[in-house]
Image 1 (cartoon, chains in turn blue, brown):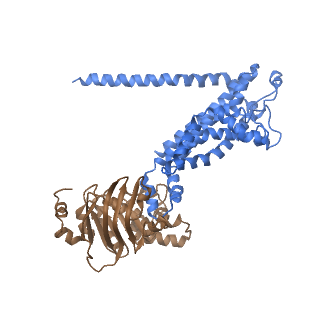
Image 2 (cartoon, each protein chain N blue to C red):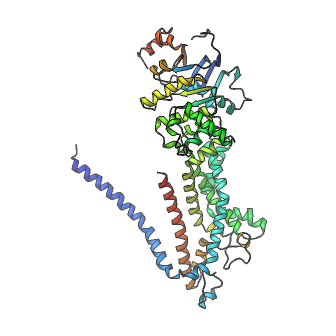
Length: 285
Length: 260
């Protein structure tokens, strides 16, 4: 038998190896965050949050420019995506978890996995076909639909696993007092799984908020604020991930800086939603 | 198997050749049994003998079990429980159930747990719900302990209290029959005593069937006892008869602790 000392030594070696690996994985993340912040910090200003971008000439002439239209546009498009994807995603999750014997269950599972694995740009094309073409215009609405296709399968899967975590006995207890099945699900199972559901929404949101590809053919982008209020929904609108790309490939130095600042905002939104998701989970435990 | 009438009691529930299938395998086979009105009937037998399987067949709990299927007849007051035209919800309102582990609804208060069976089907009459809540909790011998904190979550109670809460919730919908699946197996001796006393009081109003692997419990609380063994009903008779002078050798061996 090995001595106790050598067993502790081996235990510590393994622990050290695990910590080292974790650090190696985390380093690129910190480099990205630090680099983005360093590059973009000087461009974050009141103007950045209050002025629209306009033409490149504005920046070159030293006129104030910003990305307020991009930030609002992102909020509008993401909000539309959330409104569409949550009811459908939760509904699909309920089907996956609560009706394992239903004929639609395996069909839905395959479709959901396919949608989840489908390249995001194809989801943009799908939304283009379903919304942009019939309506005749790029729009915030179509962007929201495209992002809803990104969020839907994630929400469905998260809902399924959250509901599965609720003991089966709770369902039987509900049935045993003469409640119909749908009532048991709606009034006892879903409330019990609430934290799991909210976590799923936030993770899906964080995924969708960073997607640029589905928005290329849908919300399209815009250098200006829409003239009318409804233009946010029915006209082309700007979004952070796409604007980030177009600023980065532009030939103007000032725009590069704005792009870094846009990246700071986008990263903050995504990190914030993950952090909130973590807290929601922690609260439960 | 005893088939002749034991006495002139009114029969509430009746099964004829009832078999529960899990796929191709029977969980219990050809059970014919009469359950008498306002009496306590205990199902005893070693683990895996089918007593719980049979109990769950009586309020169609197998409807949700994948691959499970019931053949034969089960009747309540002469009505076929498995009539395809009958909504199982109606059967389950008549035949309530309490499970092995306490099952308070996680997000609901004590009050909402008790009245869930009424409130969630649309009964909003506050006064009626208050009355039902108090009556059910009193019946379940929990009222005195929780009357000042009806708004606190059901999960905040102790295990024994949660089980009595589950009983109160089952009683709130005024079932005619109450199925109890090892209701005290996860409880401490004190809580077990409370629940056994409760069963004695409840049988004045409802017909009770209790599954237990505690033979002393069966002899303490029940009027009739059915002994199951590997999916068969071996013997059914008055509890005093089963425990003092059983007809079947295997019953005697089980009662006297020679296996199990």
